[in-house]
Image 1 (cartoon, rainbow, N blue to C red):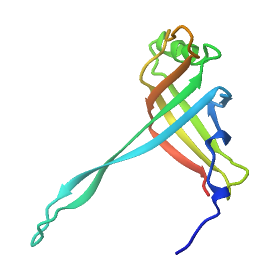
Image 2 (image 1 turned 60 degrees about the vertical axis):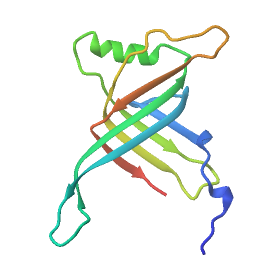
Image 3 (image 1 turned 45 degrees about the vertical axis):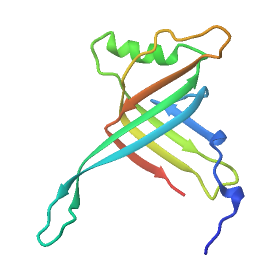
Image 4 (image 1 turned 90 degrees about the vertical axis):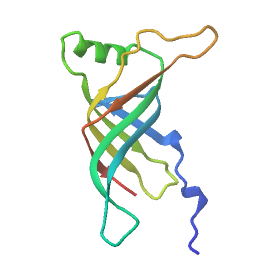
Length: 142
């Protein structure tokens, strides 16, 4: 059985994010997924159906420490003009102990909400945004 060096396990502390080219130092979490949808395909002389890919539905989520109104302003600037708020996100994960780094770009990100206020006495404020995106590029892989 092949093994691995545990120091090569990637630590999310070394993650970074850019939104339309702007570095987002307050980011806490990035999740990008491409969900694959299938339809069953019946086959002669087989009781088990096969699977045919019919769609890819990319979606994601980002979380931020609330330090400014950046996200509110970016989304508001577009929707107030009747424009679809589309953005590009680049995620980078570059732990110095890892075997390399990963960079993924998500294009045409459409956020599903704008957070105008969300706070509670005694708690640090965090913003969470879910979104869908149109396509992605694997810029760097390990």
